[in-house]
Image (cartoon, rainbow, N blue to C red; front, side, top):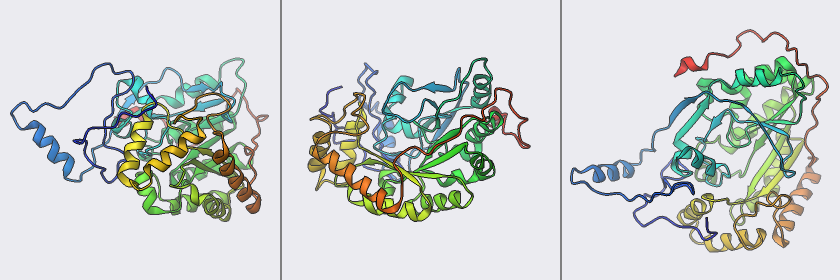
Length: 377
């Protein structure tokens, strides 16, 4: 895909409450070009009215039987060796999400489809138990929710993430969670005992303290206030909490860096990290359309600064660069974040977890073990 974004035509519907985008942008794997055509039966007009009535498109959750659930990481930029993603797509609808292009592998749009077509890996706990019980398995730094939010709305009823945590508890396997949801506190009954053994850490992603900005930037994620409340509840229960100020978007949430760190420290955060915005593949045109819709007065300036910190492009996928950026602006943002962390006592290293307790002979699952997610479909 060219670095110059292909913006939608003027007929693209405007922003809708509750969705990061309503643009069903084609993925780079889709070789066919499509255009709406009125067949004379009023279907196109009816679709236009549906989009203009202010009703957000409905979310559809589909069950999937995963062949495997553990993914290995080979990037030195990422602070974990293994990842688990219980869902594909994410209803939170964060416009900047670097995971959006993965929906293209399913033949779906990285735009609207990423937010409304959610795939639930209903056998995730079974696959995890099989993986951890294999002879020769050795524990590593494991993260839940690297390319989807494990506590997005579907988790309230499906409880796949909770079932995964139960399996990890059986094997006493250390893990971290990163989320924008306050729903993580639902599982405090599992997380608190694990934390007491040094087996879990939770990172809350907070990009802004401004609820108005959050509503358009991350429309279905928890409000900033609720995320801070979740941090406080986790901390009070003894669960170590970290902060992610990611992504940092020049002239949008970048002015809030110090305020976010201060608020998180007051809520109990003990560690933090920050990543500047990157716009891989279809995320670039989606973000630029969003920027033009909500911040037309500064859109060009924001995009120019993004290119400054990405070597003249909107994304730099090279190892060693994609999480840090380059140039004076990237360095200044890094220094500001580091100074704020020092001022408020947050370390910039990963919260340490204990891998020595892992056992390939799991303890019996706790009462109320979450299984049979397939029955919900």
